[in-house]
Image 1 (cartoon, rainbow, N blue to C red):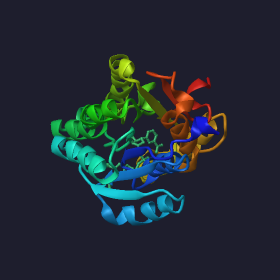
Image 2: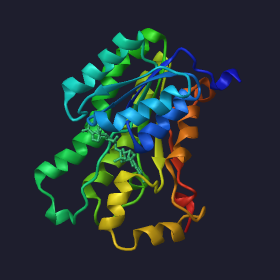
Image 3: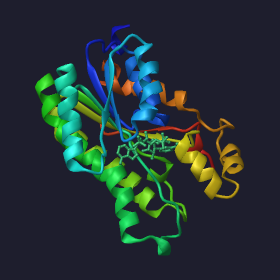
Length: 254
Ligand code: NDP
């Protein structure tokens, strides 16, 4: 079906070497796009690249730290140099530091905000010219249930993920006339390295998520692939500025 065909297009996925980022990269690759995945850990990227290439697309790893503006710009430039264009950007790299609000240092606050929110802004800024040149594009930002809810242990994380939703709306309004759609995805609780750490730090999290989620389970990374395919392809050409929960119903249950 042409609606989901993006053969010949090129995607850049930050944090695409594992977890949700790799699942999103696989979703986009399964629609035919070539993919650059960016992150700090090249070792983790080896199996990610194998999985992507097994889908018959070209895939490359770009070593980059998204908290550095120069790396955000270089990532985009390297993607264009390697693949000749950039059509899809997934701002997925993220981190969390879990503490009570009174216990954060200023550096810890900045580390979370820089990784989750400022990086997404800088990468989007860097990608804009390339997408405009290509005649349009797709930006997909990763929010969280913490874009909607609060928790005692998540002050900088929730601030960053709430910011992702508002930033998405602003970029969507600014760049709609350039045929660039900007949307956010709000994953529920997905089993990744990030949440394995959370489960060891937050008492009872495993069971409370199962109980609260109408689907009755944690999400797995492949649960995130379909929404990436939708938001990266012409199927979503009139969808912009939204924040789509992919959460087994977590955010709509009493
Ligand atoms: P992981 O810890 O598995 O993945 C995080 C990814 O981000 C890694 O690939 C990591 O790569 C990359 N990354 C982190 N910091 C940097 C940095 N400074 N520069 C470049 N890359 C970086 O976690 P998830 O897959 O769970 O998280 C992915 C996104 O999804 C995050 O934005 C997270 O907040 C969000 N999310 C996750 C949920 C979940 O339940 N798992 C729920 C809601 C949102 P490397 O280590 O190589 O740098």
